[in-house]
Length: 300
Length: 266
Image 1 (cartoon, helix red, strand yellow):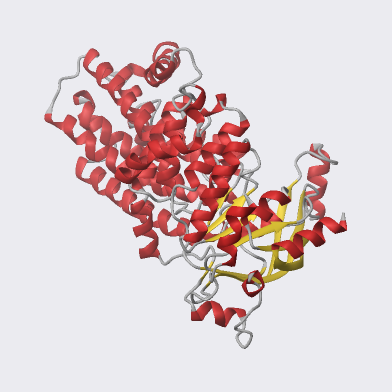
Image 2: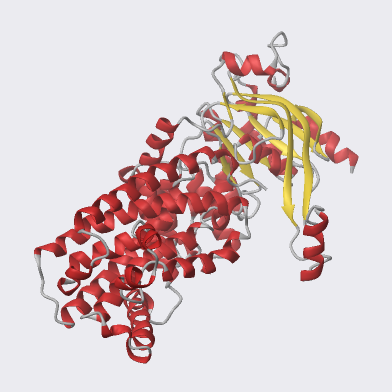
């Protein structure tokens, strides 16, 4: 009886031939890009549920709980305002400095946290990766979705700050939606790149805070963007206009701040074109780059 | 238990085509381990290492599986035995496609699922929420999950002593956690199911139920691999057993013969 379960009847065939005859596939094989995308789409419910669960669990052992989702951006804005608005009084050249500053801080934080959490998207989820087989791209996307939920909270705070500082509500507020959409796609792509690099080079996590801080200063968050053109050589200022976080920050300011209209770093059509460019390039590029490494994740 | 399994084993399981589901072809698995802090942890020694271009001392390669070959067929339950560190769990991971082999190849039908003791779930979330997440992670559709979630909680038996399903998983005992995880992973029909010590932590009652579940899975044309140190449960559930020692296949045959040899050796 049980003996028969052991002998190899197809002794004439090599194991590889036997596998081929019955249509077995190599375990852990990387699917083609189209198939991979389809599988990833099938996991969309997992990604939304997982990101919601992460947001819920991240604050579950604090006293104030979900209130921190609002308190964190508020505190952040208060600290930056204290330093750059009151102590250094940068607000000489900007008509509504606090709203200007908060828009920049919140939009930049979205990219910043997505990137820094993205570096550990693979290394921080090794348990899940080694236990279950699913398209790994779900992990960096989840990281971005978690940050997006926190950003939406910040946007509520920001809306209140903007109104409180006397900005009018205009139709342009609606443009915040496409702005955030473009930035989300950009962030997903960037997070995927960071996740793949971070899974190989574990030292990256130590370096990222410095990279991000440099990027913060190059993104016109804390001071008027007009300073770029006043103090930098022409080529450097033109180059900085391409800086993706700056583009998204200026788009958000364009949408929310009536007072900032004359001081935008480039014209609105140019900003939209750049935003779209970055979203498409980073979104597709990051996805393809991440997919190419699919087999390596979870090793060693 | 033995009375229940006998008729299954004696039946003409083998005649139905003998379709291979897992083909393991001369597989070697080598993985790198970061040992963490050990000798030479000062900044100076790290710099010296970089300058002299020697390999970091805290990375070590472990050759865990050394050239294992076998073929598993539909409807088989295969036990994997061997002492600690003999490469059983590593082999399962390679079959699941989670650890690519350094040499050789693993061919599988469909996507094997690995059920380990520490399959990651979110400890800060309630059991219910973990059930939903776990099912979605296995690729189920949301409406399917809604239907199956109460059954999973019921099967795991975590609500036997009050409403534990709505409490965070970190409050569970290790047995309860393992039961819930097993209940989740076994809720789906798998072509190939790999179970790594997951049945060991449950109590007697749960073990009986889970062994029954393993048999059901196997009967629905799946192949089940079971890693366990409890030879009793291997004898109860598996008709074929593979004995690994030091990453090498020592013996592959009917459970009775292999287990007798394994126990005789000690």
